[in-house]
Image 1: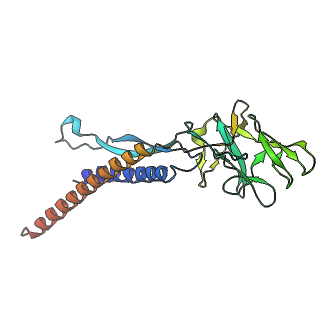
Image 2 (image 1 turned 135 degrees about the vertical axis):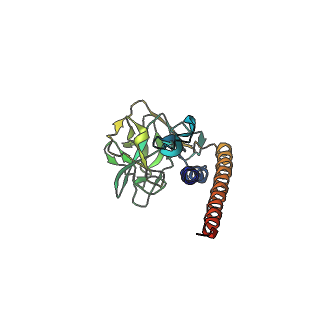
Image 3 (image 1 turned 120 degrees about the vertical axis):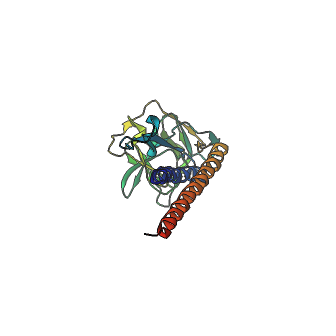
Length: 254
């Protein structure tokens, strides 16, 4: 009876974590550049059960172990915004932004210019170029972002002078699965060294949407919730059975 409760509890804990992952995916279905997560589980066999009255195949107890969370870095669909500062990354690269905690990495290419003239992401963090933060001027207009990330503008109200304001820093990682999500659609390098991605290209006036499939995630949410309810019912029944057995044993005269 205890084994049933422990096995059921291990499954319930794993389902709780899976619900959290699926709920986060659903909540970010409209977040630019968001990458879906998937839960990975594995079977944990308990080999120390050795009751002699068990038949051979029943001696090993199988638990559910939450192994890890897998990042799905598949390319999301692109959407035209006609905002000259927006970029959609074609490839595996990340944009680099500066946060109070250091450099962070994102696929969200929804950019704007803040009150001090710095190019920032949707969270207000400065976007890092090849030579540091990218600074724009008040008289800049007709912004052009080339496929390699070079930002050029026409400068001046009366004169039309081409000026380069910087080049977006596009980086990649040897093992993107080791990146840590930190909220606000940002990743930390987790000790890895970012490398320049010269193969990646950007599309001006577009953003990459979330790669979450809302239909699939809602179906998964229903399935996981149903399984969680079934496990909860099983655990409650086993608990009631245990309590009833104890009560009956207490009524047996000494």
